[in-house]
Amino acid sequence: MKLVKCLRHALTMVLHSRLRSWLTIIGIVIGVASVIAIVSLGAGMEAAVNSQISGLGADLVTVSPGYSRAMRFGPGGDFDGGSSASDATLGRQDLQVVRGLPEVKAIGTQIRGSVEVYYLGEKATISLTGVDQSTWKDITTDGIGEGRMLGPADSNVVVIGERLATEHFDKPIGINQLLTIEGRSFRVVGILEEGTGSTIHMPISQAYQVLEDSVRGEYDSIIIKVKDGVDVQAFVDKLEKRLMLSRHVTSKDQDFSVSSNIQFASRMSDMTSTMTMFLAGIAAISLLVGAVGIANTMFTSVLEKTKEIGIMKAIGARNRDIMLIFLFNAGSIGLVGGFLGIGLGWIISKGLGAAMEMSTIVSGGIVAIALLVSVGVGIIAGIVPAYQASQLSPVDALRYE
Amino acid sequence: MGEVEVPALKGVDLTIRRGDFVAIIGASGSGKSTLMNLIGCLDIPSKGTILLHGKDIAKLSESDLASLRGRTIGFIFQQYNLIPTMSAFANVRLPLELQEMGDRESKARADKTLTLVGLADYAHHLPSQLSGGQQQRVSIARSLVTEPEIVLADEPTGALDSVTGREVIELMQRLWKEQGKTVILVTHDLNLAQYAHTHIELKDGRILSIMENTHMRMFKERSKE
Image (cartoon, each protein chain N blue to C red):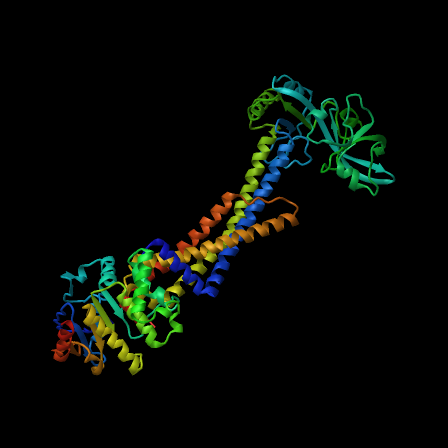
């Protein structure tokens, strides 16, 4: 029998056992939809993370005191996922090493700490970053929302994050408002763009005065902007070697970290991919359950159609014809389940994306893989029942009641 | 405990001539259906040889055996054995599809054969929408559509009333007389067997007698003239 006729007979079988077929299809739909929804959410999350990281500047390299192989946020970030057991610091000698490298375009030193801030009678503890105001605008990845960035001649002025300006105090902080930081008054000259945090940025020379534990000439980080066309990873390796030499440390007792956003992006991308794959793997278990459902349906179908198999064999059907009809039957259940699962998965991913305020990506690749997997699952689940059907003796099958 | 082998047929030595109308008769359990299954290549003998067109069917591959059944033998069953989810037309066309015949030719042949059995107007009815007699005529059309040399009928009137049964057996007789088919009828009904030319009587798996119905031979010779 021609393949197209086998397929038509298989589809007729699906149509004539609608309820059972649909119940089986639902199993596949749930499995495929779960995988699609999770993978599309994961892809959206990965794209969002990558976009945020690329916004942080791919040409920035950060030197931090302490060493950890664990994750470390990029330049200017507030979060340090790494751990440092060392009390090492960065100083002027390190700065000199950095300045000696020809790949460097701009250097910014920073110190950080927490300060008490009073605003219109309200008090809060806020994080503060002292920045090198002459280069800060070149190395920061935050844009200005209102007002201006810090200038080289500024004194007693601060630039604050958007969240601090709008959310921290009962009344929003505006340009030219005064903040009392550790008993000293500072005028707000700029508010960073939307989405920036709650940090106060002030000239590093004044930060040394307000941050209790700070020591002039010691830094919490040195941020370097490399020249265009520089291989960032090669620069990181080179800088690390130079600093190890100047600090008289080896890789075993290294007490500083050099990191770039490229490394971070790669780590984050690996992490989100691994998490997505893990969740998709869990979701794929329901596909396995769907496959068992198809196998069960096919075994029932073979039993139910034993007499028809006998009739078909009596009028000239070969084993191959019977096998193909049942395989196509199982495959078509997988195919329909796959199509519906993709549609449902797309709806779920968009719904979840909207609820979680994040984008989701249903790529052509994952759609194609989902279809192939669902058809494959159907066919694999149908192999044993189809083989069993094809091997029935015509006489025994005709006698079956 | 092992399985006990019970031979259904013993010492059967039988030649069926091309163009004969043979009735295999006998009581229930006499081995009629087993003989029919063997002649129809639905089963393979555990011992002995069955030659069809000079070929030993036991030596044919599954695929060749299926092809031989599809092209050479047309089956008519007591319970019609139509595929319930297919229309009368689709049931009749099915053997041609199994032989991978082209769509146009298979449609024309299925239409022609349904017309031959008087069911052209019922082509798109499902078996459940047809009477027993009509279903059996669809079954006959399905057995004839491949233009087989041999028509094997197992109690073809067993589920029909006497009038419809007579119509069906007369239709089979016309096939024998007018188209020269080899018709093999399995029945326990002696009245039905009277329509056949050769009677083979079975008892307990053995052939009791092979007799020619001279009246039928004369009838056929006259109709040829």
